[in-house]
Image 1 (cartoon, rainbow, N blue to C red):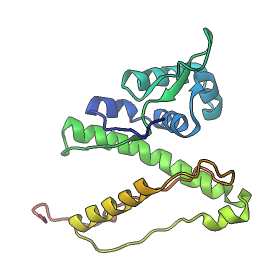
Image 2 (image 1 turned 90 degrees about the vertical axis):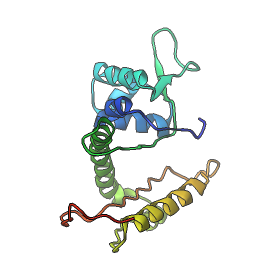
Image 3 (image 1 turned 60 degrees about the horizontal axis):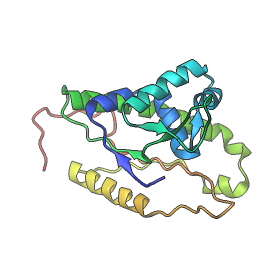
Image 4 (image 1 turned 90 degrees about the horizontal axis):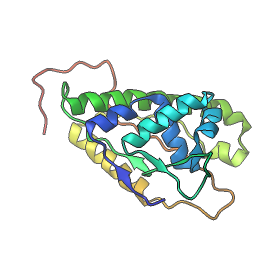
Length: 193
């Protein structure tokens, strides 16, 4: 698959703002093409529900038919892009509301991954247990410094090359979140460059 990304329009992003659809899209991106039936089994859903969600993803440009697989009875799907970027928008606008709805669904999926990773930790071989890390750092930053931090981390992640030919290599999830610590108060007139 080409290393492409999509920056969805608000209506596309709203269609993606469903945890089941995000899980399915993630599976197709990481594990490769699949049928509605195989996704249903992995997600613990019925194939009718997965077919519906796949059609919604296809209608909004996130998945496409995998024409190299299947026969007249099986429809295979593949991700159309390797990543989704969000542009967001001001609060109370369609773009802002769609981005917020998407982020709510994404956080549900991220939380599930973290919980599952902790639960499966004891089953990992020691080198992978040693390579696994759950951290947080709290710093006082300006909005500009926070944006610079995310750009720097993003550039580092884009430069990482996958170890496609190494049999010891596995898919590794790197989650980096930058946000003001919840519960702080803000002056409505507060402005900063």
